[in-house]
Amino acid sequence: MGVQRPLGFWDPLNLVLNEDQERFDRLRYVELKHGRIAMLAVAGHIWTTAGNRLPGDIDYSGTSFASIKVGLGGISDIPQSGLVQIIAFIGFLELFVMKDRTGDGEFPGDFRNGGDYGWGKLSDDVKMQKRSIELNNGRAAQMGILGLMVHEKLTGEPYVINSLLGYHTN
Image 1 (cartoon, one colour):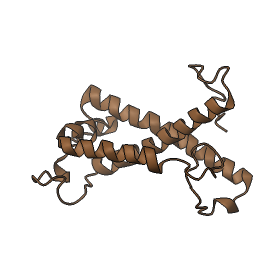
Image 2 (cartoon, rainbow, N blue to C red):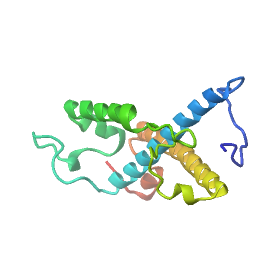
Image 3 (cartoon, rainbow, N blue to C red):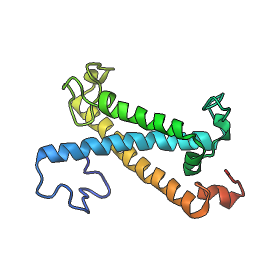
Image 4 (cartoon, rainbow, N blue to C red):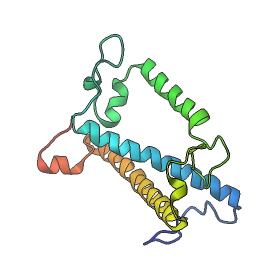
C-alpha cells in the first residue's frame, strides 16, 4: 500500500532509504494523521468560505464566530486565549485520543481502540482498497490545503477561481 498509480513508489527525499519497518510504519502513521487533518482542513475551509459559521460568540467580550475571517486571515481574529485553548485541545488529542491505545490496531494509524465499526466484516482486499483510498485522499488534501494557504498569501484570496469569476471571499 502506498505505491499508487501513476507515480508508483515515490520517496524524493529518501526518507525510507535503508530504514527498517519500524521507521516506515512511523512515517506512514504520521502521513495518515496529517492526511486526516488536511481533509478536515479542506472541508472546513470550503464550509466557512461558503458563509457557514457557528452561532454565537467565540468569547465573552462579544467576538462572534461570523466576524472571523476565512483562512489564514482568521488566525489574527481569534483572541489569544482562544488560540491557547485550541493548542491545548490539539495537545490533548495527540496525547490521549489519536493513538492506538489498546494495541489492537491492524495497521499504523488504526485508532479504533476496541471498536470494530464493521471493519472486521470486510475482506482483506476491500480493507486494502479503503486504506489506499484514505491515503490518496489524504495526500490530495495535504496538497489542497497547502495550495489554498499559498494562494491566499500570494493574492489575499484562497480560491483562484473566485477572482477569475469576479467573486471575492474577504
